[in-house]
Structure formats: structure tokens, C-alpha cells
Image 1 (cartoon, protein in one colour):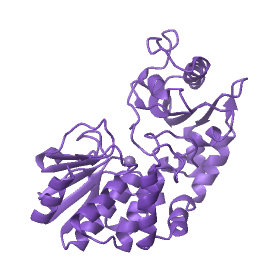
Image 2 (cartoon, protein in one colour):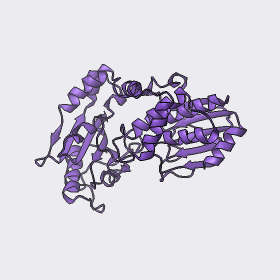
Image 3 (cartoon, helix red, strand yellow):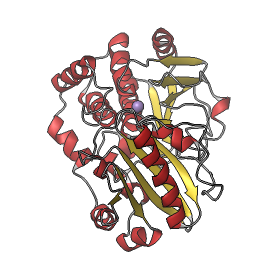
Image 4 (cartoon, helix red, strand yellow):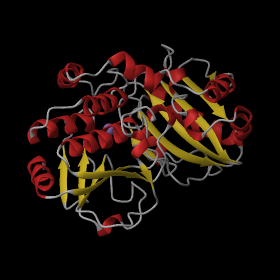
Length: 352
Ligand SMILES: [Mn+2]
């Protein structure tokens, strides 16, 4: 809990901070916010991640200090693990040999830390880092405020998602008072695409199809499209949300070929349509309105299977989980998409 975290920080000095693989805005913003908070207390922190900082977050204060490493090679007084469902999610070897502090805002997290501070009422871990600032008596510096604000806007979809509360706006308002320029942060995060992303988007959006009712849409990205655009894996982030912006659309599948015959599949829905139930049929998971899984097999077959399940879910507005996928020829389940990665975790209504 919070008081244990405060006591630990006051008693110790040499800390590492990490978050999940493919870190998102909350993972990075909260990690760097905590980094600047510890720096303000003259502590000795370091942010370590398995994966590099995505393009959208390279302008965050301190992003250049993030050390990319596959293992926690040296002893720390404690390692803060931000926004992870279990101890394997950071993808760091030897993490279990450290004193681990688990900080998360998902009620479903396992209590894998020696200290566990979980606040499922927080819209983002960033909100918790802000509370930690107050509890420990540090006035948020501009760096802390910008990192925490980035966590807030990315986890709430710029205040669009259902996790946005009065308290989210209150914290945001206090961060602006601490020096955040909302337009500057929004531009750094959302208006900072590389051309490769737009080139890829043009091709992927040309594949959008929908069923006769217009309530289910799907789109695909092939390995060739990605190569032609010279695009990185993260360039495809957010594409699944474009068909969701159509008023009639209630469910979307985005099949992204990661290698021949292997499709990382992102699912989105509105309202009661539960795409997590569908992802689970293929070994994936997520939340009611945002989930992911991996399909394998032939393109058309994979697409037909997942689209059929979405149409069924929309028609019945609730999938009977006992229904097996298709007729036994369905694509096999394989590695599941990190359910908490970017955008997979909240009620996604719209995001771009
Ligand atoms: Mn989060």
C-alpha cells in the first residue's frame, strides 16, 4: 500500500523502475514520473525496460535515460514494477531476485511484489504517481507533471474512455497548474507520426470491409505492406480504432500478419459486445471492449472465422462461451497478445 511505498523510498536510495514489454503511455509516463520524483528527493533511480521507447514517447522528459536491457543484472534496493499483471510481464530476467514493488491500477493484478500498491479507482498509474508525490511532500516539477499528464491522456484516450472520472480532470488540472502545456504534450504524443505510419495506414485502410449490416468491420495488414512502407511494428498501433469511429460499427477485427500465416489480431467493440470472450477462444484475452489473440493458418480462413464470431456476438449481443470456434478447421490458438499493451485495457469508444 501507499504508506509502505513512502517508507521504502524514505529509507532507501538506489532504485530501478520498469514496466511491461512494449511499454505504453501509462507504463512509460508513470515510470519516468516516478524517476523524476525520486530525483527530486536526491535518490538514485534508473528506468530499465526490455523494449525501446516507442516513437510516440521519445519526447518525454527523461526518455533518453531509459536503459534497454533483457535482465536486471545488478542489485538495487528495490525495483518498482509499473502496470504489470504478473512478474513476467516486464520481460526482465532475474527480476524475482530483487525486492519488488508492484504498482498497478488493475484490480486483476497478482500480488507478486514484496510490497503491492494497487488502486483500481485510479484512471492510470500516473494518477497514483501524482498521489505519491503529494503523500511524500514533493511539489510536482514540470518534468513529473508532463510525464504523469502523458500517462493520463494515453490511458483515458484523451479523456474519451469510461475510466475518465472527475478525479482524472482534477489531477489533470493540477498538473496544468504545475506547468504542463496540454497542446504541447498532445502534439508530442499524437501529432508525431513518422511518414512510414501514414504510408502503411493508406494501405491498411484500403482493406477495410464490413458485413451487410455495417455493424461488424475488419481490416488486415500483410508483411508486404509493412515492408513496402518501411514501417515498424508500432506503426500499426491504433489502426483497429479507425473503423470504430463509424457510428454503425459495434465490433472490429484487425488482423496483422507478423510472419507468413501468423496474425496478431486486435479486437474492439462497443457496449455489451464482449470481445475478450472471443479472444479467449484462441488463447488470448483482454477486456470486454478491447482484446487480442493470435490466429494462424490461411488468410481467408482466419478472417472468416474471427468475423463470423464477431457477427454472432453482435447479433446475440453476448457470446455463449461454450461455442467452439468454427467447425474444427479454425485457426489454432497460439501466443496471446499482451492484453495490457497499448489500448487493450479500457472501454475503447474511439481513439486515433
Ligand atoms: Mn494503465
